Image (cartoon, rainbow, N blue to C red):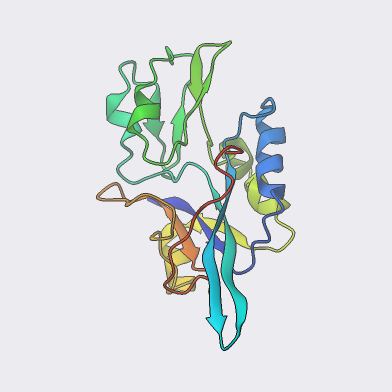
Length: 202
């Protein structure tokens, strides 16, 4: 049984948010309701070199959404069993069963579930399941102009990108949740730790 996942090369991502907008359009979400978000991460400072001060700064972008975890923390806390994993490992929410209790929101380390106040329900990235089941690709992957994103069986993605990892600043430690998202680290950061610069936006 396959487990679908996403891969992103952070060296290729230019932060254009085409993936975010394609996801929004496909889901029919209102402004401010994003299943996929593009985090801007940056850091560094000025360094004195001789008599001059030169910038030693870095910045990169991290597209992120539901990671369709192997052990999703959102699933067991749902009191109505509205959340399930299908045969491809896609974690989905049945909005007809959702009562908007927020438990899945609180359980997710990465803020993937989004609460719709008017409808009183929660929803999130469903891996464009209808499109994928019909033989297509997720909207976010199709929209990326830099081809920085890939999708497929996560083990095949790992084999294709052996350097890729989930341990990317600023994503929370996955612990034993096993998120199915992989990133090739941005070389500009090196070992330096940055912070999210567009916190208000996301």
